[in-house]
Length: 242
Image 1: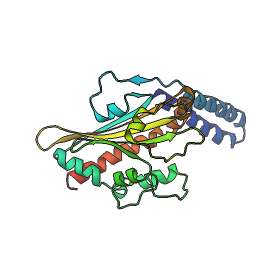
Image 2: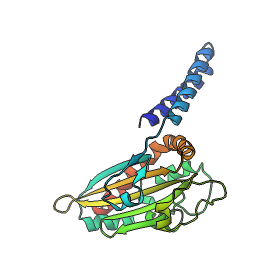
Image 3: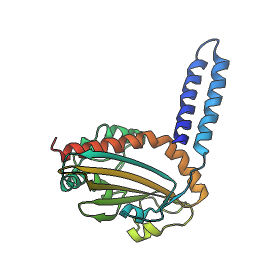
Image 4: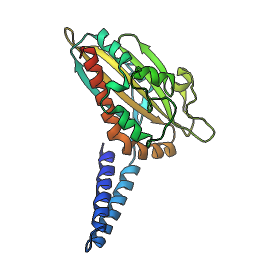
């Protein structure tokens, strides 16, 4: 989180410096602020990403991503049974997720493309679209947890979008890769109430890949976090019958 804050502090300074440079009498100050902002962005993008390693895996996600350097976790409480929540996870569509299609349009810079999680039809279940296109369904405990994964960084000659088996994905440690795993986990929380959690973990297989992905992650993190929060909100609304 410190690295993300550093990057965005630098970006704000760059914007402020650019505005000042357009004003007469403040160009020198604006140039200094712009330079400081650029250096701050560079610092935030290159801060080390510590590696986390789980000693005692307890979930399916733990089995597929026991080691990672980047992650985010979001949780919400739902006034519905575990079965209702799990069904909502399977059925919620891109159109139900607030600003999802707008954010993914920005993420792909407005470019058209094939159907994928970044270009999902409005009325199809989003998880179905993801696992039919760029994501692999890694494992599932029906009614409790589902795990999906994708290769987000690969060396030259390896085509992004190739679909390894779940076992190949889990054991992939060759240099030049970064692989992302994401789950939805549902746990009971009293009578007709559940806690649903989504966690994303990314493991970069070598220092060069880690540095490359770190810069990307720290820029897209706020949008990524927003998408996951509103995704959980859409699941809660659907499960509760809204």
